[in-house]
Image (cartoon, protein in one colour):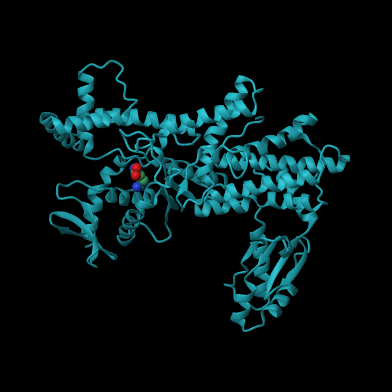
Length: 575
Ligand code: ARG
């Protein structure tokens, strides 16, 4: 449930009844101090000012028009004119009980947008490296959250699968095949790419053939297309392996590479020319944008077709926007890339809008992120200064988690150990990234992320198993505790209110594409549960209290598990 929205609606209604205009905002927010209540309305002062009224007097008039006795225990006018709202224990209990029996843990939002999420997007014939980690896991967490809230999500893996380098790659693939290397081992795509480049630079006949193959590929030559597909398949099979290891929901079917848009490009350029937006400039087709100035202060030129007829990354993204609106019928597009592509996206989408290719209400959002840094504060690299492959990073995570778990809990069976190591290793890498505000760079630090203390995956996973162990010890199944939650103690109350705020945080994650808010929520929830558990004995209490507290514990466990799942992080029952 969305308590904030419920209170916001009620108070807004009362503000209007008290004389405010219909556009007034109640601005109800969660309070950050318990003495200010559970929620507070911040909109009174602004509304009173508009009406030329004393804010505290206006607040009193609003309260006179407000009937929320069933929800609120107490309403208080505070400071210059805030309204503090203290929720009623009975109301909290009732909704906690509903949440406990609901399959969505009380989340009632029913969004139903079609959202295209463009994320991960590695490049063919290159291996996934740490530069693709953030887009892949932040994007996937937002995808899961959007789906959980009811939206239809179309995952668009905008793979770099087209370009002039494919002539060279096809020629090299052919060479490798002709040399009859049995079981052609392309597992080292980087080495393959390097070798192709070397042949291109050092062997004129090879270079000649490569250039010939680009032209053939572009004109739809069957042989070149078959070879090209082979390269795409090999790359995507490797990516899939990484996605599976990462517990990321992308599949082969989600691949919508740059090549998908090729057939659309000539018409896009033609239309832009027809509208006078694109002009010929030194043989190329260029769109000059007043909104962006170059160094000389002149409108910046964005090339959409080169002199030799080739199209560009921007042209493809214009086509992708058109496709997503007209063919996929999306309401919203979210693009996840690092911040260095900001200008690129702004330009592509500005051209798309200026051309009238999509209507104003079609939402296109670019959610960017900062860099992953090493402990030295510089971009994360291998010891020798190379790019870190994602598979190597995950191998190291498994290695480190194995050592950690062997030392923490040597008594686990081999099977249990395997599951715990995997959940902790992958979870740690993902959580350490997802828990940071994506707008900032962050330091990738093995020791921090594998710590059982602080806002880390192992801490969260352990918090979950601790609750599970309460049930295990009592020989009880979480699903069939009868009875109901009845709130008496402050710590029970604080826990229940936090649990009921799950939906509010998910809505924010879906709106702003910021999974760190969910991490923060889960971390706080785990902390609130700990203080509840310390202050409120469960198994030794009288029957009714015990039942109520067990139910609160069960809802906490389910919320932690669900929340971690929305982050793409696995939980285990024992660790
Ligand atoms: N393949 C690109 C890269 O590796 C990312 C593509 C992002 N998506 C897009 N529609 N431009 O940087």
